[in-house]
Length: 121
Image (cartoon, rainbow, N blue to C red; front, side, top):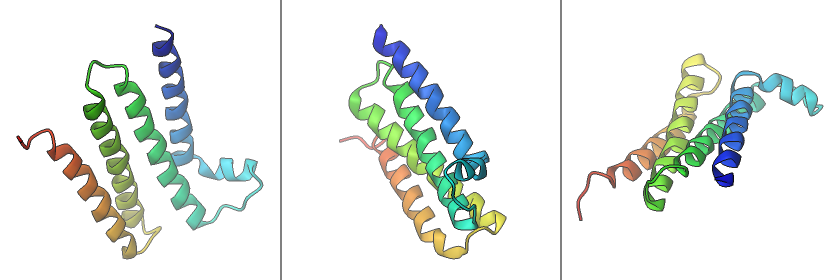
C-alpha cells in the first residue's frame, strides 16, 4: 500500500514538473541563471514531454497490467508526447523542418510498440 501512495505523489509531482517545463520553462531557466533562447525552450518542452510520459508509466505501474504492457504503453506515451511536442514546435515556427525526422522516428516507435497489442504470434 505504501508503494501506491508514493507512486501517486511522485507521478503528480512529475506531471507538475513536466507542465512547468512545457508551459513555463523560461522561469526555470531564469532560476538556473541561464538565458532563455529558442533552443532552450524547445529542449525544455521536449523534456516536459518526457516527464509526462514517465508519469503515465508510473500510473500504469499501479494497475494489474503485465510489466510488458506497462512498459510498452509507457514508452509509447513518451514517444507520442515527444512527437506531439515536435509537431507543435514546427507548427509554431520555433524549429525548421529538420525536426521532422525525429517526429517520424518517434511516431514510428510509438506505433510499432502499440502494434504489439494487435499482432498475434
